[in-house]
Image (cartoon, rainbow, N blue to C red; front, side):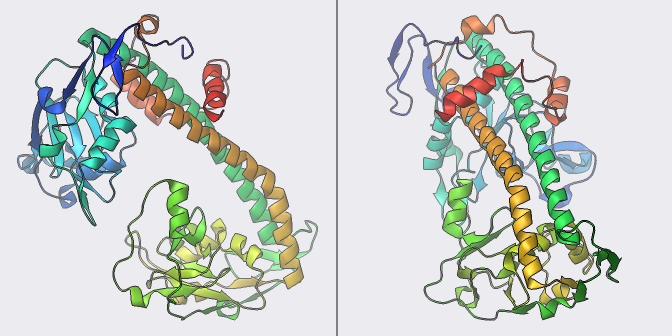
Length: 480
């Protein structure tokens, strides 16, 4: 199915450097020749209700992982809907703004049946020529198209894109019957790839639970599983080894109050990687983040192996600093004392039991509420001999290293299959690969309801090995 694809027999120059040659019978056209542009209008998210008329907002577009809108996340009342722009099935929607060039112009095709509206800052392309809306969805989001849209962006802090520029975005357009064959093939392959991704994500989840169980056992009980236990008197700790004691958190850590130094690099506090240089974080996630531009003189200095209480600590615990530098002034920097083994506490302070205890110190009415040193001090910590802390940390590292390696391996597979998916779509919708013959042997399309279920369902890996052996082979091909 994948390896049988070949190029078209005849090509011509598209006159577009980004596109190169296209099949001789294909058209290359700007969006203005495909349909008419308009801009959405309406209120803000304060209009949202639990049930009502489906509403698409611009933020939904650049956070949307799929390129087809089969359902909406937001709803408005019928009374408010009159102030919003009505959409039609097959409209192509573009995000009019975003924080980065990667986000602007992010598009999705509205495939929602019935009444649906959109809010402001949504750019709408309504096709006026006969074209397959799903083909437009695939073609508008390939990397080559995204690069065109990025070049059209304007702004500094917030990036904007306008219909005056977007209408010149050029796509390769095959005949309508061929668009249907391409959609048939890509839909089929996309469903298989989704199942593959769901299976790998489930594997990562199970490996994460296994790792968490290992860490929890060692952090809360130590290495000796036969040690006598006693009541700790601290609810989140429960029973602890009888030679451990419990002490106030402020006896372990103090607040580092140093302001940023001129040579300090900007740090990012992340749940996934700890506190690392912002440039390193951008490289790891392959995108830019918003830079701090105000109150630079109030930033706080951080030393390597400090711990940081960030705005997300109530979700993911405290973050260890892996480098020295400067952090936002709203964060709290904790300097470890002599009774702290940093490696051990990097596990303890991110354990689920500790996070729940930290959450109990405040009423988190809104996401992102800041935690303070006072919150931290209200959660007592186990006082463990320093050498035992080091031994526990070593045992955790040894026990979890194999699990972490497996997680990294599966994560790498996910990255590769996503990269392969993007490459496959781009090659097909730009005419580098001919799917016409292969598409005739694909089973009939599943219904839209089944597609929705397909998106939401979590698949186990059992039963996928035979069906998706071609995808496994493709992973090896991409990695090579």
